Length: 451
Ligand code: SAM
Ligand code: SF4
Ligand code: F3S
Image (cartoon, rainbow, N blue to C red; front, side, top):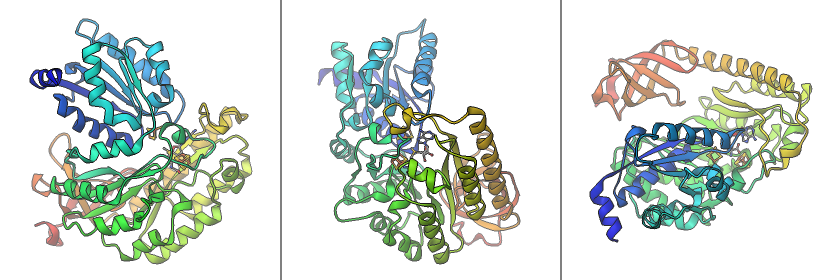
C-alpha cells in the first residue's frame, strides 16, 4: 500500500506502443485505465516514459523479431537515461512467455492478454522486489470482471468495446486460438453498462470487438440482442462489429439488418479464399456457396450493404485454378475494402510444416489480387462523387484546417467542417476521391442534422 501511495505522488509516465488488431488497441486503452490507479499517466512521447510497454501481435511472420528490434531501439534511446520499466504484453507475450525474459534481459515483465487484470499488482511487485515475472495464464473471466469495475476512459467519438475473446475454430493457419485461448463471451449486462458509460463520455459510435465477434453467446444473449439493446442508447448513432466468421452469420443476426436503424451497412466478413479446396485445407468450416448465400440474403434485405474481407494468398497447395476462383469471387462480390496477405507459417499451427508454394508465385498472386481489390475500392469511392453522404465527424485534421470523419462504410472523409461538428453526423457533398479517402464540402442545404 505504501508503494502504491508513493507511486501516486511521483506521477510516473507510461508509453504504450500497440501492434496488431483493434482488440489490442482496446486492451492498450484498458491498460492505461488500470495503471492510472497506481499513479501512471499516459504520455505520447516515449522519451518521457518511466514505463515502456509494447502490446504485440503474433499473427504473421517476424512478429517476435519485431519486438526484439524495437527493444534494441528503446535500449539505444535510453542509453544515457534511467532505464524505463519494460513490459511486453499481447499475443507475442502469450506465445513466447518466459523465453522473452531469457533472451532479452532489458525486458522486465511479460504479461499475456488474459492476465491484464494482474498488471497493477505485477508492476508494484516488480518495483518492490525487482524480480522479473511472466503472467500468461488463460483466465478471461477474471480479466473482464476486473475491468468492468474500472471505467473505460477512452473518450473517443468512435469507441471500441471488446465483447468476446478467444477462438475455438482452429483454422489451420492461425495462432489466435493459442494466444487468446478458448472463446469467452462477456456477460450481456457488463457490455451494456460499458456502452452506456462510453456514450456518457461522448462516444457516438460503438464498435463491438471479438476474434469471433458473431459467435458471441453469454448463455442467454447473442450478438443480435446486444446490437438491439445498444441501439436504445439515444446518443449512440452508429453500431459496428468485427471480426465475424461466416459460420456464425446466424439468421437472428441477419434479421437485425432489417430491424436496426443504427447498425452500419458494412459487413466485414473474412473469406480467406474463393476456392472450396483451399477453404477445406484451411479448416475454415464453410464453403464459397455458404458465403455467397449470406451475401445474397443481406443484399436482399438492404441493397446498400457492402462487404469487406480478408484474403490469404499462397496457402500451401493453392493452384492457379484455386487462385483464379478467388479472383472470380472478387469479381462477383465487388468488396468495398479488403485486406490481403501472403500465407505466413506460424509455429504451433497445423499449416506450419506444410510445403510452401513458390515465393515468386505468391508475390505475383498477391500483387494481382491487390490490384483488383484496389480497383474495386476506387470504383466504389467514385460512386460517391457528387453524392451527399452522412459523415460522423471524429476530429480536426492534423493541420487543423479541415475535419475528419467516416462514412457509413468506414471510408475516411475530409471536408471543410469545424470543431463544432465533432461528434455529429453531418451531410457532406463529395467532390473528389482517391482509393482510401473521400473529399467534400459540408452540405448546407441538407443541414438538418447539424444542430
Ligand atoms: N477471426 C477472423 C476470421 O475468422 O477470419 C480473423 C482474425 S485474424 C486476427 C485477421 C486476419 O489475419 C485473418 O483474417 C487472416 O486473413 C490473417 N491471417 C491470420 N493468420 C495468418 C497467417 N498465418 N498468414 C497470413 N495471414 C494470416
Ligand atoms: Fe483465427 Fe479467425 Fe480462424 Fe479463429 S476463426 S482460428 S481467429 S482465422
Ligand atoms: Fe495479432 Fe493477437 Fe490480434 S495475434 S491480430 S494481436 S488477436
